Length: 168
Image 1 (cartoon, rainbow, N blue to C red):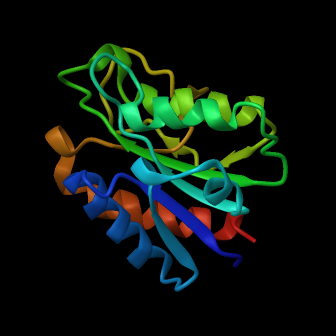
Image 2 (spheres, rainbow, N blue to C red):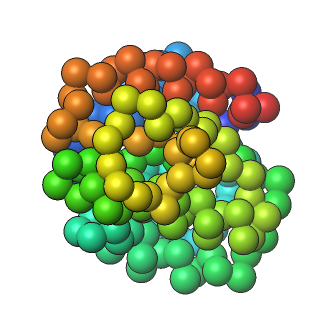
């Protein structure tokens, strides 16, 4: 498995805890943790395989750090790069835009030729709508620490087994 860039906010306690569980689930020493709040274009583009933490903020928005960074790679081709996305949302508090951030990021990546892997089932979730939907699946790992914390570890473990096969 080639090196993997794991991009998340080092300042987000929940996202950092999830990142550590992902690293453990992959059992791989080839993962480089990168603080998404401090990245530049060159550092981002050096990877072939990516895991991006994309929590959904407010009413279905990307976190500020992603909003500020993405314009710097808008003109870049992501062809030949593989991305696995995960992020938190609140399906009861924000059922009309549950984990929209994952879907927004997937659209951005796919428009630039990147491959998104790690789709997960919507079974067990209750929400009204989500930009992260692709048919009957999320375009990444949807986590709801607010309402389903007890399911997080199992979901992460299952997802890491799936994406490990996609990173070559």
